[in-house]
Amino acid sequence: MKRVIIILVFLNIYVYSQWTLLNSGTSERINDIIFQNENTGYICGTSGFVSKTTNAGTNWVAKPTGTSNELVSIDINPGNNNWVITVGSTSTLRVSTNGGTNWTGYSVTPVDYKCVKHADIMNVYVCGTLGRVIYSSTGGTSWNIRPISGVDTLYAVYAPLPTLVYAGGNGANRIYRSTNAGVNWSTINTGASSSHNIVQIKFYSVSTGYALLSNMEIIKTVDGGNNWFSFGQIMGSSNAKAKDFYLGGTVAYMSLENESFGILAKNFSSGSGFLWYQLSVVTPQGGGAIYFNNPTTGYFGGELGLLYKTTNGGGEPIGIIRTSLEIPSAYFISDNYPNPFNPSTKIKFGIPALSAVRLSVFDVTGREVSVIVNQHLQPGIYEVNFNAVGLSGGVYFYRITAGSFTETRKMILIK
Figure 1 (spheres, rainbow, N blue to C red):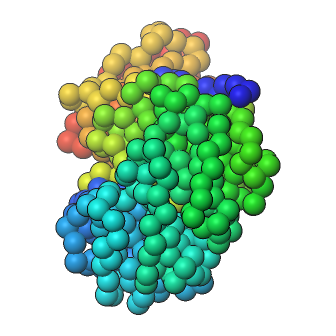
Figure 2: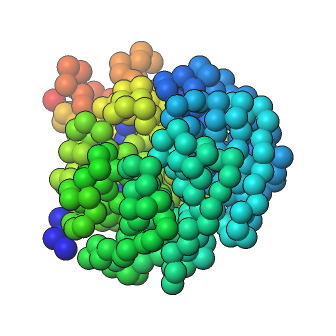
């Protein structure tokens, strides 16, 4: 398999603005996000929670499912947004035909389900542990078991057509395909490493599809899955694992998680090329649920019910750089360097919690002459460049306010 390397260095990453923190109405971990249209969508997660919005995420209403088991995947019937299916651990499968007001549970096979996807209005597929695929041709009101023998866990399933379905999971070196709704399965060698997993599969036509691997690599087919090649890979922390991805227009997004963070990255060449940038949204303790209605409007969720929305693809670089994913134990700001300087200098600071951060520059009279940072930032260590073009030489002071923390330091501009 041809190897094309896409590099994301987890140091020296541009931070993006223009993300709004929504009130999800829950403190549970958000595992999946799905929208039927720009207004109607659902989220699901731990403790069996499902919530629904009908106004593009502004408000979310809990839709009790009758289970406390973790829900990991949710999908909406493409022909009727009142028909919703969610699946999760301990063979949990819930179907609603009235927009989440009531749910019916189905006991099909005793496994942990990992993914649910509609092929069309009537045909639905679910995959999970023990190589199980289950299939419904009735929109989810009856189910048939369509197992793949000799397989451990399946994390991803996708059906470009009602009877054409792909599945993947443990061992990224193989993808499974059925042309008769899972009655028979064939194994396709992807050329990827068996030490990684396939975590998502998405087809944008019958012939063109993509699979996301746990090692942050995307593989692609252009001949209906017969052959696969590497479409690029994010290189970074070995502890980070890919969770989900979106390809649209000239951009791509990939969600990642490690032991401490859920992270969202953006690429400006639809997943190929060398420039992946970490966006400013970070969820604590993992996460990685994403959904994009289009290349500019998207949602990102994770632990503690944190849910963010962008309407401009995450914004443009604003000059703040996160220099480390390490979370400092306390707020701090360092001496600028160089100092004295002409005309620019760098200032480093750290914040241990999500905070409204304002970093300003004052002259000796106390007049504010520049606002360098004025926004909410996630925990981390940051560096910002201050350019004093237009200011006269002399003594200046820079002050940071973040949470209850305030500190002022002196710098000297030489001209």
